[in-house]
Structures are given as structure tokens and as C-alpha cells.
Image 1 (cartoon, rainbow, N blue to C red):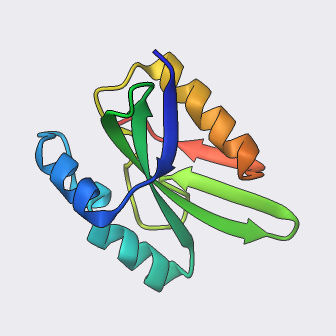
Image 2: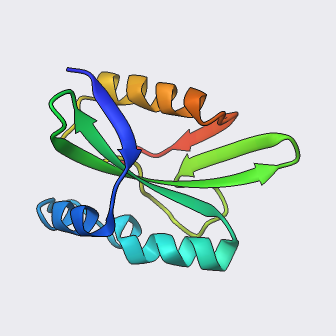
Length: 116
């Protein structure tokens, strides 16, 4: 099963998160707003979709520029977010492949990922 990462709207994010018992404060839409406002970072709220277009997971991804590099993380160091990473039931090998493809398309030079 191939996976695709793409931006998702708030209603779909919130609805999906309510179905996952392992979600935390750090996966909430509102926390990503705090990261954006408090740390001046860009935040991508990504849906993890299967080949049929079914939403299988969520990935909050904070981004910042540092000199010539584009850094991204879920969570990104220094954002007062102890854990984050993908939320949902997604096969890790396929998720990592999709994340690598997304990173290449968005020209991300460095990526941090917590698997909690």
C-alpha cells in the first residue's frame, strides 16, 4: 500500500483525531497554532492518505529556515513539544517512504521525527 502526504483541512483533521485514542495535546490543531504564533514557524498539517484516497493518519510538521537550510520536524527541536510524529494506523515503511518523497518535493534538508 502506497501512502501520500498532503495538506488537510481543519474539519477533517479534528474529525479524524477524535477517532484515535492515542492522540495528545501535541497533535491538536490548536497546538500547531501555538507553535506557529509562539515560535514563528510554518506548520504543515498533513493527512496521510492511502492509494484509494482514504485518510489513514495525521502528521503535524513544523518548518523553519536556518541559513540556507530548511528544517522540519514532528516535533522540531526547540518547540516545547515533547512528542508528536504520525498519528493513526499507518505501516511505518510506507509512511517513511511517503515522508521522504514529501521532503524531497518540499526541499526539506533536515527532518526530525518522533515515533510516539
